[in-house]
Image (cartoon, rainbow, N blue to C red; front, side):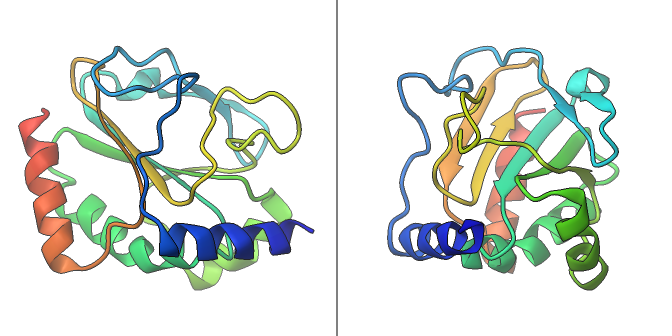
Length: 170
């Protein structure tokens, strides 16, 4: 069932690039971001407070999402190339630890990773309301949401444009 949902969302997100915002979106552009806490792959609570003062790039994705896989290399490149800048990337997926471990061994993510987060509300009420994958959210160094977009960031040219925006938000 979950794989079928992933395939359907992948097809939908490939066909349509939509702004990933709604009335209930907790991360609307121009507003201060709330304190964000997630459980990591081992069930430990992870707060993004340690990233405060940096530009934070949150990337919501899932295994089986074509656009998500297409942008993985670009986001790894961006994260690596901006390591000396106050820009931090966080990968957020719905996948469980047992499903993601094998996938990560073949498709590494080179930045902070949080798994088993229900950002679509499939298991009940969710803090997030994103129903399009991938969705990327950028919080500037002052804690204000500057970017909230559904659709992959793919390729060197698009990556360079995105990197230029990220450095403006420092």
